[in-house]
Image (cartoon, rainbow, N blue to C red; front, side, top):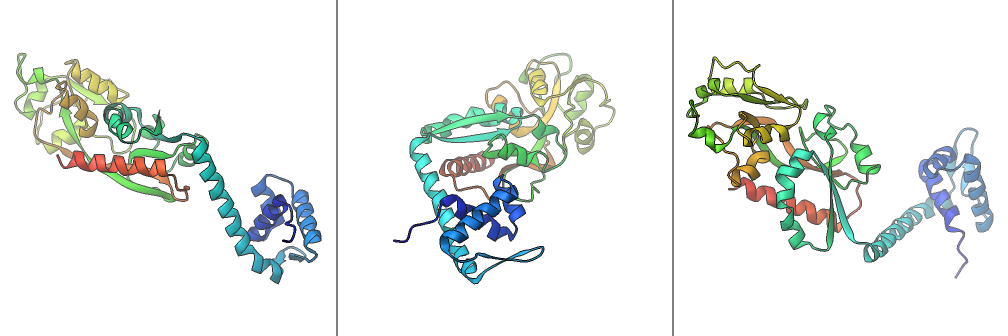
Length: 313
């Protein structure tokens, strides 16, 4: 068997050949252009024939290089897969999921024991990030979350238009009034119909995210007039709105999925049978070119099934 040239020189050649540029290869490999030239020259000396035709301002592959390049790229891909397989046998499978703290606390975490019970071999890391709520640019910070923060999956409320990413809709969302069940029967003005809201304190979620439901829109949908939507208690986070509603501070307006956990527990109720559909939805997002990861695929399959089961109730 012929002696193989150094692996590093082959890697440099593959990058330079793919980019048809020593400069671009240097940037990709975080080395100098001179280092790339040195590695290519050493490889050509080892092989005994040239790999590039040097022009004044460009390089071209020789016929020998053109023939070898596809197989070389395939070989590096195979090596990468082999390394990933070895790591899977030495590392615990894990999934890092990023979402708004409100969605984590009120929707995912109460259900997460189901996934852990089915997949005890997978460690979960839940990252709550409020910038997922307040960022108006649909793709803002996405690359940074996935690369720098090593996030595997993002769950986000938005349009679903995220170019360059794999996107699965989790579920559509409607906004509903929410209050303590006690307000339906107790006090001087128990809640019987939407017009009764004029006697109660409105709880406002002033978080600045696209598609946020407002009392103005809900009351318009309910054909209710005479309610001053400027009054009430204003909060900068939906968790505070839900907490205030649970504590009988007033009536909040929020997304039904975020309240379902407290509704099931009897802490909150929906006083009126009028839901306001929202234009945006919750989505599960992954990088388009992400490496296959069985743990990530298992989590995504589970959460989509969980959401489907919830929607069918």
